[in-house]
Length: 270
Image (cartoon, rainbow, N blue to C red; front, side, top):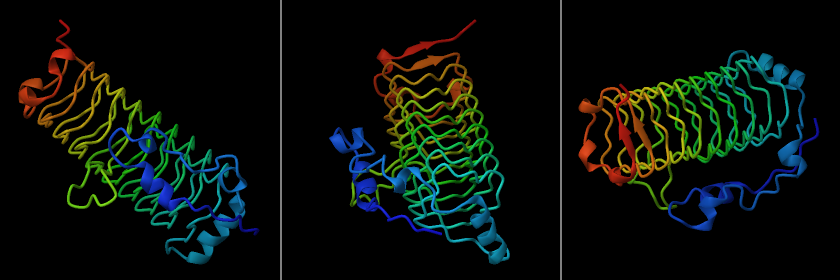
C-alpha cells in the first residue's frame, strides 16, 4: 500500500474555525490544496480496509491520516475507528457504522453518509461541506466543524454537542457551522447548539425540543413547522428567519430575548 504524503492540515483547520467576521471563517478550506492526491485519491482499497478490520478482531482500527477519498466503505464496521485527519472526500460511507469513531480534523467533503451510524463520534475540526448525512444517527456526537451545505434531512441529532465551550476558547470561538444545512425533519431533541451557526439552515419540521440555541445565529433560517418547546432562544439572532407555524412556541424559553425578532417572519398558519 503506497502511503500518500500527509498534509499539514491541523493548524489550518483550527485557524479557519475561529469566530467573527475574519476571512478565515469565510473560507474553511484556506490553505488546503484540494486538487492534491492526498485529498482526492485513496492509498488503500476496500479489501485493504476489510483486512485491517479482520486483523483487529473486534478492536477499533487505526486509519488516522489515511488518504481514503472516493473509496467505497459502505456498510463496514468502523466502530471506534481512529480516522483523525483522514481524508474521506467523496467516499461512499452509506450505512457505515462509525459509532464512537474519532473523526477529529477529518475531511468528508461531499461524502455520502446516508444512514451512517455516528452516535458519539468526535468531529472536532472536521470539514464536511456538502456531505450527505440523510437519515444518519449523530446522537451525542460532537460536530465542532464546517458542515456548510450538508444534508441532514431526517437525521437524528439527539443530544448532539455542537455548542461553543466558552471555558476553552484559546483558539477562538469553536462551534458547529451548519450554514445552509438541510435539517428538514431532523430530530435535535436536547442538542447543544449554543452560539452555533445555523444561518440559512432548513429546519422545516425539525424537532428542536429543549435545544440550547443561546447566542446561535439563525438569521435567514427556515423553521416553518418546527417544534420549539423548551428551546432556549436567549440572544439567538432570528433576523430574516421564518418562524412560521411553530409548535410549542408558548413553551419556548427566553423567547422575548431573541435578537432581531422584529426582522423575522412570525405568524401562525391557520
